[in-house]
Length: 353
Image (cartoon, rainbow, N blue to C red; front, side, top):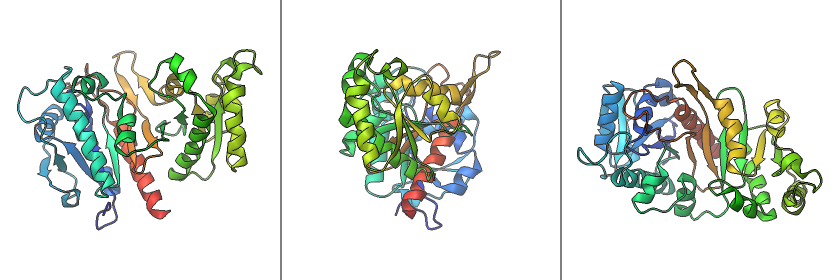
């Protein structure tokens, strides 16, 4: 049973790298009673890490260590958590420090979350940030969370969906992500573009969107100006769009990448298919992140990362471990709250449909 007896979905929340801000923002998120109104949150991590996060945030929650998600109480003021036994003593990690042990912990928290979701014990996994260098140090050669989830769920076609929090409504899904620009160009094939257009339609359905207007960004300047600035549009992107339209999808493109996001923000499209990592990430972070020029700190960190195409639900914060802020009680939990809300929305829509 992925839902509590009262209908609330059980949401597993991995702590991320213990040396980063993940544990801190997890505790801060559970300080919002409305989280408990919508779901039963279950932290996936270790006792010592949670205790340290409570000290950093000056919270006095009751800890409830569980052996199965169904044992979670789901009450404000109580932190239900599933221990993993990786971080067990002082000195296993230090705030802001790259470490093999903390990289191993971050990795195992994710694997446990995937396992619980695949077994149907939780409705979704919400992930806090991991440090890629740390998990590599621990011997796990993955480019990031998305690739870990794809591997452990045996998923071939998947996509990274970014959604801006708040009222902007901007959604972007990526054809390529954590590869070099040179490699990205080679990966933009007709087959892959078509697969991601289909995933874009799936994403809008999971989010409960009534309209499903998909814009496909070009790769080159001005979407190549009919081949003047490159052949990728003609050889890969346009053929994929034509096939998607033949399948009944509402697709426009290729739209020049310097205007497609403006049009999406203006309400012309419900999702944009971006060709590479920064093409999609930059507009999303311009919408969701705000920095206070007086303090140099982020006054707003809003945004959600969702992996589309998996057999389970996975959402995440749209930021990194922020080692420079770890242990200082300066981290903003807004993106995590957005990610939890998205997980609940998708879980409820899957249950209905």
